[in-house]
Image (cartoon, rainbow, N blue to C red; front, side):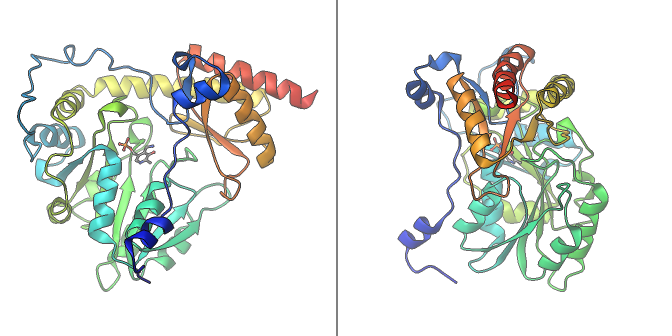
Amino acid sequence: MSLETTEALVASSNVYTWEPPNRVIAARYGLDPADILRFDTNTSPAVLSYLPDALEGPWDPPLHEYPDSTYAELAEAAAAYVGAEPLEILVGCGADEVLDIIAKTHLAPGQRSVIPVPTYSMYAVLSGQREAEVVSVPRRPDHRLDVEAVITALPGAGVVWLCAPNNPTGTPESREDLLSILDAAAALPDGGPAVVVDEAYIEFHGTSLVDLRERYRALIVVRTMSKAFAMTGLRVGYCVASRAAIERLERVRPPGSLNTLSAKAAARALRAPEVAAANAAALAEEREWLAARLAEAGLPPTPSVTNFLLCHIGSPAEADGLNEALLRGGIVVRTFGPRSPLAGHLRFTVRNREQNERFLSIIEAWSAGRSA
Ligand code: PMP
């Protein structure tokens, strides 16, 4: 059903909401904004804070001109990093812009958009903006994909959105499950929907599906510089797909949405991937330490392969109570609304040891109060 006015469309759209910014939290709780720690956005400690000059060579991007609209240097660096050709890469202002371009090129009003839930909420937001029909497919109780249910939902769909590893659960997707969905999509008479595999967290765990882009022309693998590469504020993402799939996406890509500095910095970081790999390895170790401490405090998290941990706290009121205690201590975590399938849960980003200790001291005090 197509909405008749732009007002109706905008009013009916889901809004993607972040937790409040530091300035707002500081004012609300009487804190110094500089003391607030973000445990909500799955970012990394600043491993690349020495950019731009440490990676290599001079740093003189021409800021009085527009960027090269083909972003050739970045596309080449991303292609070399994932083992593809530059024409198999589309770059965007964050993975979020890439996801937006996918929605614009693959979803028409009323068309089905298949989303295994819970997952990254932008997929539903972008689908709503296209006036697509969101078909939510619940995951199994252990958070694994319900492959049969996903396959049943595919006919007539424009996109199926898969997130591997999955945010916010932190769980890996099995390659076998993803292949079953790709095969089922490819077998549909109309060629099936675009199969988006969002690998935002792939550097933390798992084998990419990038190598399958020729075998499955509907496959679009999405990546970001915001997580293991620790370049969130630069806003750089990209996707990898067959040339034909990239050509379709390129038709709606704004020519200059990435700025020159970000594109250059990201290209350099992609040419030095050992920094991100070391960061991911260190955070994986830290995650296991943090998970063990949370379990000791009576909050065992869902086993995670990423840089964040999903914890079932208890009732929604208990999750709210812990969230309040954390906010009062200047710690911001990811919350889920009372109508979310994850009501009663909180999600915590793994940060460095000192920050994790500060976070845990509040958790442990809250937990001691709860059992007292
Ligand atoms: N995909 C997933 C699964 C994410 O978790 C995020 C960020 N939280 C994004 C995409 C967006 O990444 P970017 O910062 O590159 O826009």
